[in-house]
Length: 332
Ligand SMILES: Nc1ncnc2c1ncn2[C@@H]1O[C@H](COP(=O)(O)OP(=O)(O)O)[C@@H](O)[C@H]1O
Ligand SMILES: [Mg+2]
Image 1 (tube, rainbow, N blue to C red):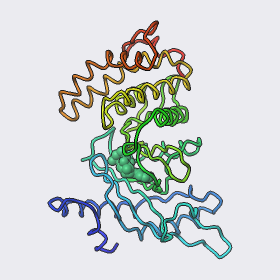
Image 2: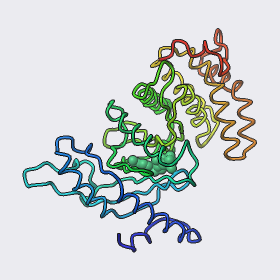
Image 3: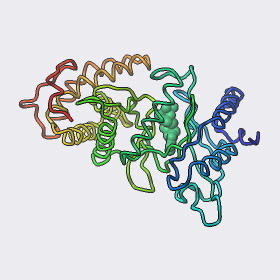
Image 4: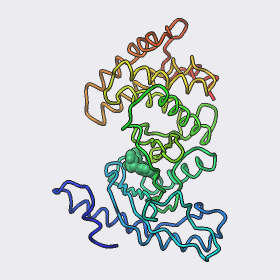
């Protein structure tokens, strides 16, 4: 790994030395990964694997994408050559950048990163969830390699949902992805492996397909599907510029679309306040932000107002608490 590559990282000067050390450790972790053969199922594993392993060993870090919940780096990986002139390329041409290299995202967990469970379990769970999503036809990054504490995925080109203008159509597309994810990772009625972190930075508008792609399953856990829906509403409502009429309309569109797919709009709409309030309370603790705690208290009222302004008066819909078992009846 050329040392000059580290100088290209976009990090504040004071933290540069510590960051460079972590990046070096992360890239070393990438070299110890078990390369998967999933990129080219047609290719014999024994041929594909060493080609990809050699390519990963030559990876250059380009940019630090995240450092709080994981060390996540964008890597430029030289494209592996085909095994012979007539053999297909080990990775699809669509995955290459203008220079013929591959853009990959390396994610490394250690004990310092907050999240669900130990580093090794998290990496394994995330790799497993991503692989299951892709097998079920849900748009997710291709997994290239996985290991004890790290995973390597293809980069999905496009803006994250946090950085684009929101409208109800985008909100519905997010609901569709989340519903498909729950179906693909279902455990039992109303429960599945969840996204677990509905931060809007975890969804990319994939330019290649024009579809929304969930990219971060690092906090996946088994739970009630409506926890993701409630957190999704919270994230949408807070999204800059937060708490505008537009944002509430998007949150309602998100919940309605999920409810349509799950077979009960009424049930989903009535359960959102308890779930979203729980997400606000959690956020209040994480960020030590009393405003978030106030929003947790006010959410039920504000949700009722939002439904009214979308022409959906509460009429027969009562707002149900989280532990109301009836609330989950009839959900997919
Ligand atoms: N496969 C990917 N394709 C495109 N961008 C990605 C990909 N993986 C991660 N990113 C970018 O890196 C950021 C951090 O990655 P993420 O998996 O969300 O890590 P964390 O668990 O630390 O939040 C994302 O918000 C996104 O901007
Ligand atoms: Mg993330």
